[in-house]
Length: 158
Length: 305
Image 1 (cartoon, each protein chain N blue to C red):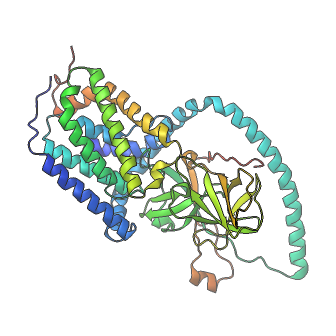
Image 2 (image 1 turned 90 degrees about the horizontal axis):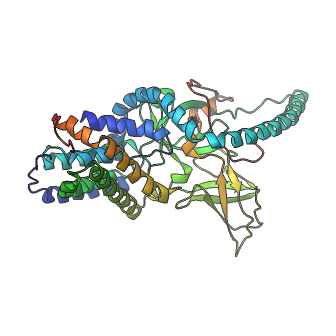
Image 3 (image 1 turned 120 degrees about the vertical axis):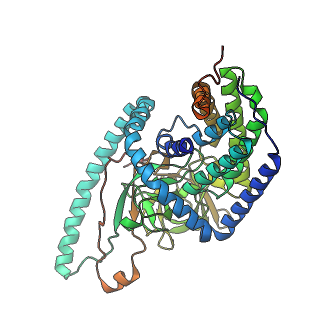
């Protein structure tokens, strides 16, 4: 919970100010939680609450990110084996899941009349956000899992 | 390798959470951000805002350095443009000072007193944004500083930014006009029209029904006295292309003076003024709060400054 709160605050402050690095830190944390030993039900619940928190802090529809993050967490749980072998695999896996999440966000948001999601540079943001998450996942993904699980041997690739 | 977690029966939980999420979205649409949803939003923002404020003060120097480095190539160009704008502004200032002196002279001559049209202003720092896909701005002033929902927001040059959407005692969320679903009533020359946001661009679409004359490149778009959300005469942007009426309807593209992504400081206007105060006092108190910690770095696109 502390990590999620940290992610929310960093996302809304630091990454709210820097325009050219725009990861979705909260979505990334939700994705990386799937690699930990936390129970899947708890991960889905956490994903939903995290999305709800971001929705409550912003101006868009309440429940939009909650649905997106929960769906992404579910896909992450179903596909996490693909990320367990290499650091690059963790990065690619997180990047692709973020792309799915961002696409869902734009799609569901548009269906519910959230045209503000399709603001200026939407096409580049749809690509830049997953790329930034890919980079962060590659750099910090394994460390994150070790930290959450309290297991220093987890995700040590030979 | 990590330990494999038993995934259990998470599909029913996923479906339940998605249904709950859709219900929440429907509630939000139906209540238009008010009611229980509004209370939840305000409550959460009240709790998180102090943390965001503290974090903002800590990360601002880092963000400034990174932002400056990324924009280094544009700074020289921007400096030249700003110098040109400054020269134009100084020339205009001389003219305005002359006109003010004449106005004062005439007011004294006819015993007139200036009408109290000053509007209370609260200067606020932008402390964050929800995420890459939400254009809203979070500011560090709230109800404790006199900010209320629905108040108009401008930048430090007086150009229109947006409207206060939600407010807590110590913070507020602003929705820029580019992300607002409601059209803004504006005036171009003597024609009243609506300004609507467009998909995938910062430019807005101007629609004038019952148009009588064409609009030309560079025509200034101002807020109209008909607008329920903004005081009249605030600059919004300029028309980017010539457009003529077609069967009484005119459509044109407008480039805004303000790009919300670049804002660090905004000014919340206490408008409409309190009707009780307005009726009892001839002059509305001005300049309520002006506490700032940063300098403005607003980017404008106006040619003449």
